[in-house]
Image (cartoon, rainbow, N blue to C red; front, side):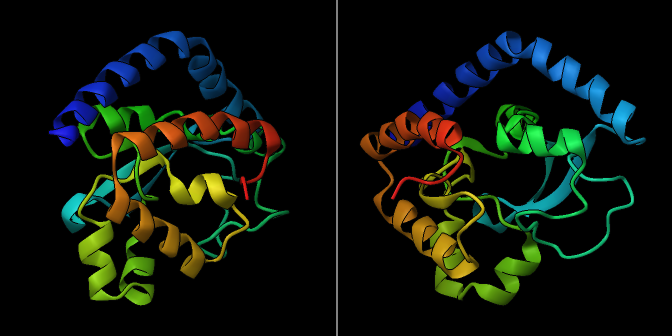
Length: 188
């Protein structure tokens, strides 16, 4: 029953935020290609509920031709000047509101992970548990240490969330997410 309510809350919240944040979305979409030629939107395959891959949308924060490692590190030279700002403020994540509308994601859930990490780093038990719920824009792992957690630690938080999913836990994460954004680091 909670999952049906959660989906309705996701739809309502995503529509409201897209309307309210539309000026930021438009300005960011214009500013990115002015600094670094190319599409303002970055897309990548991620693993969704039930192990179904989906295309995630983000504002591009790196140079168009940025190769290199799959995971971004603090101080990554591929990140543009504007990219640093939109990553620090999480503006780069706002296009994921469209993923929420499509049903690929939820506001709160496990991190949407890249398929190669799921295949190489997760056990079958982890896949069965974590991929049983929609990935989230924010989540238990995200509020405990955005970019400064290693893959096994993030997975531990995602497993814990999937085992304990509830309205209370989602509300706790929802309240703590703005604090993490303001502090620029996770809450210990």
